Length: 299
Image 1: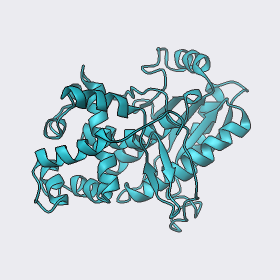
Image 2 (image 1 turned 90 degrees about the vertical axis):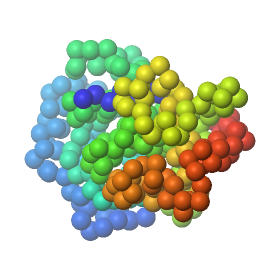
Image 3 (image 1 turned 120 degrees about the horizontal axis):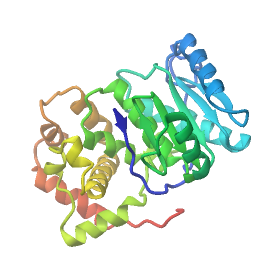
């Protein structure tokens, strides 16, 4: 199965504090990931060296085996910022029950031309997105990293979520992935999603009363979510996640849904508000908040 990320250009991730250290189970105590199978990591590195040319540098961090033809300094910035800090922080905060240990390949192509050409050569196909995607069939994250680090973190979220919550519903998977497309690190070291480019579409929908209703969002199948209303579905899911985040409820909500504590995600959402609000009232509060948000590219 191939997950296709339909994304627009994303913000550069901003880091104002470093994340803390993690358990001794990790090969690197500053990372949350258990030591991956060394034989598989070396196998993937050998495959990448055979597949690619001498312009690529092969490295690894945690379970991620990375091939990059970017400038060395820029590549290191992406690895350290987007993976070591941001993805590691999200792994700790959300996906803590079953931490990803299975290695995956990460292709970081420096620009659209390189990305398109190598997709054709490696996979004999045109990439499904101009920005990047996660191919479960090839166990690979394939990125046009020239569009920024947001697409990469979105797809890393999916790769981590599938280990922690294999049956994660599409609206939750894509909502969380989209939340972290634009991220910040708080002084306490928490990774938080910040307002991003999807706000414009949501506010347009809100003015026209055409936003995806939360109760309907949670019933969508994969085909329905990625259908003709996919932009509205992404936006509603994304800003529901950000609203829950600022309420201090995102992690608890995710855990309740993952563990089927309430038997139904809608019941879990109601439980986050002590069953004192209806889904319609939650929807109104969430999107009344979203209507007042502002976003300027580059902020």
